[in-house]
Image 1 (cartoon, rainbow, N blue to C red):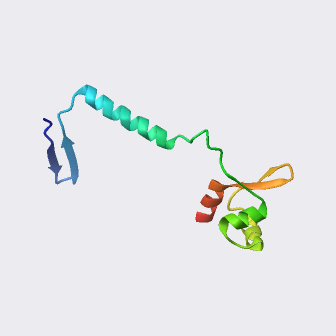
Image 2 (spheres, rainbow, N blue to C red; image 1 turned 45 degrees about the horizontal axis):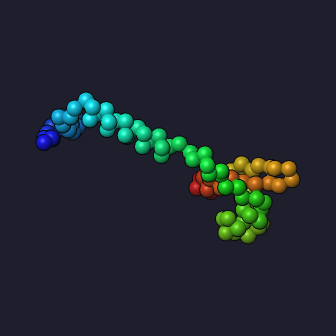
Image 3 (spheres, one colour; image 1 turned 90 degrees about the vertical axis):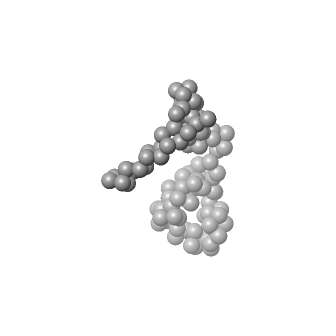
Length: 100
């Protein structure tokens, strides 16, 4: 049975939690934590970023009129891309730009 001991250092207001744990258990906990963090932070290569095509598409995405979408696109809060004659925006960049 694992016994937890809590030590409080009133001087620095720090709390330390001691637990008798084997080196293998500690290694497993660290490995699981790192693996979980890497999975959360690694983008999913199977999901391509959603593109929003044209001013009309931008207006529909942000639920505004086309003239307002033109003003927002011209404000350069997020980048605009071009594929031949078609312009498009990346959904994540639009959302990030509108939060500013």
